[in-house]
Image 1 (cartoon, rainbow, N blue to C red):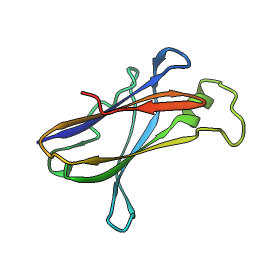
Image 2 (image 1 turned 180 degrees about the horizontal axis):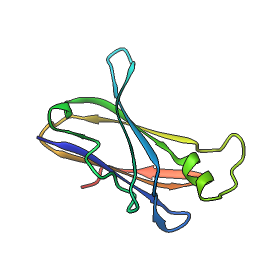
Image 3 (image 1 turned 90 degrees about the vertical axis):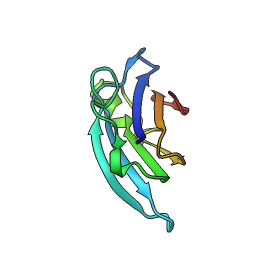
Image 4 (image 1 turned 135 degrees about the horizontal axis):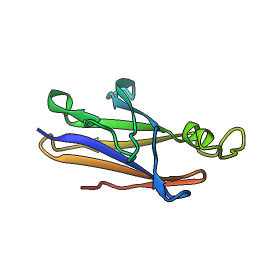
Length: 118
């Protein structure tokens, strides 16, 4: 069976994104969002367990939501209100239930990027 992992790197400070709340949603054919899991990144910017694994890892469309505004506020970064980036939402598809999908996130208070990692 495949599984889903993530990793957050803070490019503004050159370190892992520690203690960032992460939510995973499954997107229905009617565009509804079903909350699957909530977790928090560890001191290496990773989640301690796969975000999605085993029997829950099925084909479909998903969203990972990262609370980056809360992370930067906790670090003492002064952000405008509202913050330019508060919740970063990545929508992606899982097409192969046997593969590892790794979705890293590189953040700063004013930008982000992602890709399908390994």
